[in-house]
Length: 484
Image (tube, rainbow, N blue to C red; front, side, top):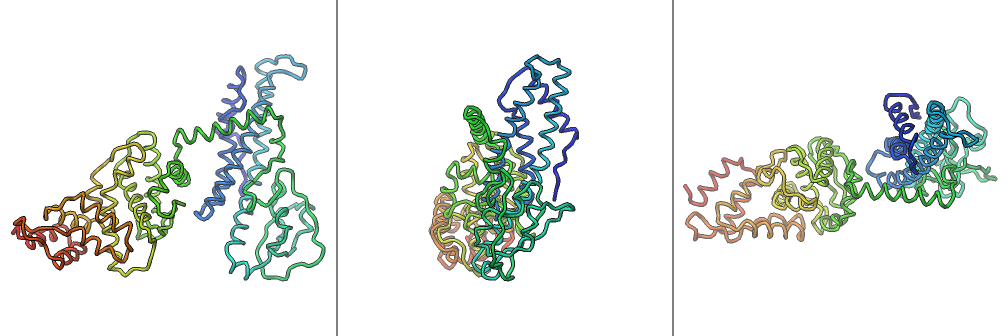
């Protein structure tokens, strides 16, 4: 189990000095930097456990719970440090004595963080395991029971010894109140099994105060029975206002640091409803080294690591009205390409390799020519607009450039072609996108400005656009249209 490093590292020393200095002559309800330190430490711990996309909803619930816990803890710590300005008789202490007493309080709460960190990690792991244990009916049929495993501690406590080796059905109410991690610093474990379930009298257990309930069910690491939550109604009002203020500030300031923040932002601004036929669920890391990105067209998008990180950075900057780098713009265009896929009303389906090429041609053509919608959603104009016409980090670049060249050379209205291809892309099956691309070129004329291209000629040009190198295709296009 990872252990929170308590310690007087440089960052911790700076925080200690800042808090003690700030509270020497001023009164605040909750010191914000103290809150951020407590919450940030615990968020990092559980984030390392729940680091896969499938746990994003669970992670969100546990983080929200931990933020509340940290706010109440920071309130207690702030109050106790401020109280150090006077002794037990109400006499004002000297600054030297205040600092000595305040440092002791700061260090005490820092020590508590060790057990809180270890327990948060343990309970998030328990929640993760519970989610996996109950992932589907097939798994529950194969492994219907859970088995309590002995602690890894060198000095295990008696409270859980009676559970060692206990096998009970996953549906048994015992697991609602008893799991590894419901004692501070618990190092027990459990596993799913097809071993025979125990049928005798099940021993009773009592979780530590503040660790009640199954976190995989409740979405809580720490319950409101924890000591920090035991405050007066007046104090509770103050803390709850602080929590709301932190949540509101995050929204107002557009704090976009993670993929989850991007999903939240899209939902808050109804972009998931506007751009996603089946909602927006997650952004994860692309595992196929040959792909820039991919999507299941069901609201889940995967991006290669550098594209993933640059996209989040780009959105964060756009939210603040800042300029983004060329790489960020290029990678945001990849993200927009995957979003565009999610606008098709039919969703994913089996395609031949040829159908895939025409579908991707249509999708990238539409994505490039609607890229301004992406920027507009964040109050910006397109930055690095070269990616509207040429984006060489995608394997679809050549055929899109060739398709655009057909539009230019045949006298077609580009906006009209875009709308026709877009309509087909979103409203027709992916198996039919070649037809949509061809129909959008209807009315194309040759060099004389009169002779319309036949359907067979349009289809022939589409085939050549799909495979031809840009310069060679343009030369062949000029010949076919009579420019040479």
